Length: 221
Image (cartoon, rainbow, N blue to C red; front, side, top):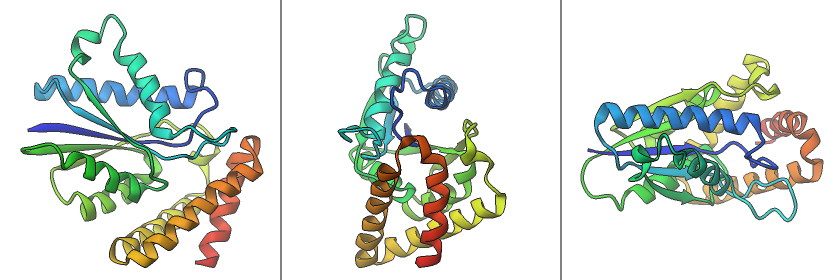
């Protein structure tokens, strides 16, 4: 059985090699993949980095997936692990702007793999329930969601009721999008507007802007 690892992105750091949050996330994910490969005796997994053009720094050309891969390659090429990682294979899904699109894009890439597959899907802790629900709708079976509680920013400590409301809203939008192509396109435009809103606010106010956007959008839709 082929191991497929899906790694969703959470923003584009100004410099991923200096960003403690991104390094912590990817370091923990790296160790999970390493351990699973050892335990399953599968040393040639496919690792799919997911995340589109959410860069808040001009000229806005970087993607979450592309930046994560750069740092991950650095981890994999360290002298004391490279003999274990030399057969790891990587793929990029660079268009997604949501959890739903992450899974859809990764599933399309994985279709090219012949034979049985086991999906391991990483996710930030507060999004775990949503990831399980959407993975069941899209991948359907042979998957395991692995929560990574890496976030030490304001995002992790919002009021639990707000976080639940936000996740419920996103699950509702994604579920409807999977059934209705017209709504899917409408939701995609909403996500594109969100990135534009974040860029106009600037990276220094990003955490506060996230809260403001969600509060407003949940009332509108």
